[in-house]
Image (tube, rainbow, N blue to C red; front, side, top):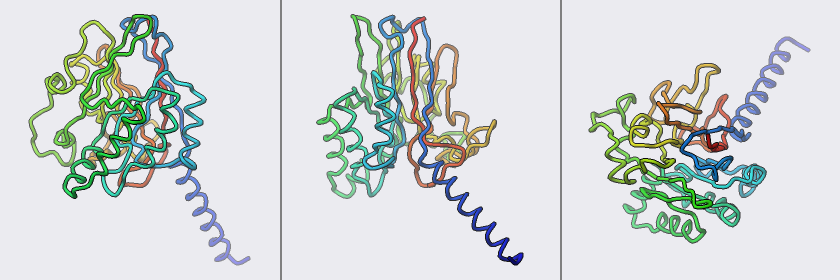
Length: 297
């Protein structure tokens, strides 16, 4: 075999290996488990298990998301929460997300909070005079999904409760001071949560569901004991031992890219997401399913 043919074979092999790697990085689900312990967690909620889904962007893992559903069924969570961007903001009626929820809600309580793509989809539908977004939300309610957009809910076991708050971060706050698109908006304050989601329970264990993790310190100051967020897609490309490279706002090396973060006694878990936004790429950044186990100290 000539040298040219050898190099051609090597090149083709590298292309095949690269394509297989990229495909695996976008479709090979990873399950990450976190334990959150607090004296505020009632004994009745010791080992209470929450599965977090985020940023599906209408991606499907197998036919009708069967691979994702099998992962969830193997965990058998007490609660499933979704933290936004389960559909795309344009040209998407949310059918993939609804098919997933149709298979989950008969077996698990599901709490849903909207992200920036849901907000944009609502605006776009109104501009076009379309009822597609309203139908999407109505169908979720028919399925029994608890819509947590600026709402509070209590979960009670044996007369002991934990408190769940949902907060829609307004679109203007996605353009923050550490992003390339910052335009000098009024700074975010915990008072915005008081006005929208309500005041945090002073003595109870408070879980905050929101999409954007950028304002973790403010969430903690407001009274969140556990914040669950997404949005960052793990930084799209992850450098081992360094972290995520790029945020959706095109800011390099975002502070809250993925994983567990702490601020005083407050904890935040940032899910890497399941699907892709405008950049259809994940490197060292597999789609993630998060398990959060609560422990009563």
